[in-house]
Image (tube, rainbow, N blue to C red; front, side, top):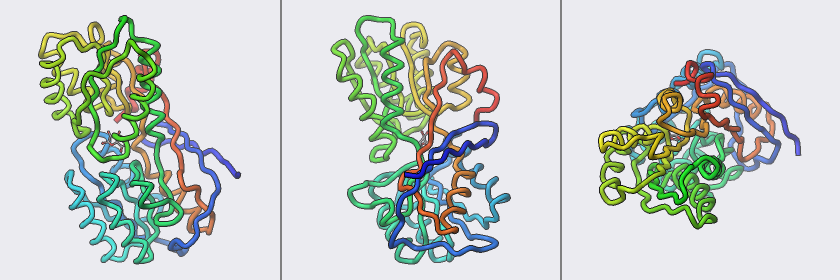
Length: 325
Ligand code: GYE
C-alpha cells in the first residue's frame, strides 16, 4: 500500500497526516477547474475549536481557488441537513461536511452523492454500518478518537497519584462520532484496572457552560471524585470552574484530563489545573485542499485520511500556548 506523510502548518500549529492509497469507485468524480464552488456547512460556532476550523477553511479558500459557501447550523443536525440541501441546490462542486451526529446527516450525504457531488467528511464521521467511505462518500479526514481516549487513559494511569480513581466522565454531543469513540477508548482502558471506577458519565454537549453545569450536578452526587475526564477542552474548562466554585483544587485534589489542545487548556496545564490534553487539530483547510487536488487528478483516496495527534502536558504546554487557538 502506498503511504506518504504530509506535514501541515496552519495558524502556527503543525499537524501530521498519513495519506494512503485505496479505491474510490462508483463515486462522483471531480473535474479539473480553475475555481471550485466548495460547501462547508459548519455545525455550530459556540467554541474556539469550531471557530478555528471555519477560519481554516476561509483562509484556505484564498490559496486553493475556492468560492467557499459556509453556513452555521447553530447546534442543530436538522438545520445542518437543510444547509447541505441548500448547497446542493446552489450547485457546489464538492462538499466538506463535519456531521454533527452519526446518523441524522446520512440522508444528506446520500443526496449529495445522487447529485454528483463528491463528499468528504471532515473532523467527525457517520455511522459506518449505514454509510461507507469509498462508496457513499469519498473519505473521512480526521483523528482516531478511540486512540485519543485510550491515550488520555494511559496518561492518567501513569500520572494519577492516589490509590483509587473515582472518575467523572463528561461526554461530548450524544450520537457524535468523537463522543462515542472517545468514550470507548477511555472506558475500555480503564476497565482493565480494578482501582479505577467511572462513577458517572454524562453529556455536556462539547460546550463549556454545559460542562460546568453537569459537573456542578455530578459533584453533589459524587463529592469524592478525584479524576475528571472530559471529551473536549471546553467541557474540561467548565468542569474546572465548577470544581473551584465547590472549593475543590483542580490539579491538586482532582486530576482533570481532556482532548483538543485549545489555548485555554494549555494555559490551564501551565497553571497546574489540568494534567493532559491529547491534540485534536481543527486546521482542516490545508488538508482538504491537498486531498481535493489529488482527487481531481484522478488519484485514489484512502477511505480514512488519518490525522496524527500530539500530546500536551506540563512538559511542553508552554512551548505551544502562543500558537494555540
Ligand atoms: O474535539 C470538539 C468539537 O469533532 C473533533 O468537536 C471534533 C470535536 C472537538 O466541538 O471540541
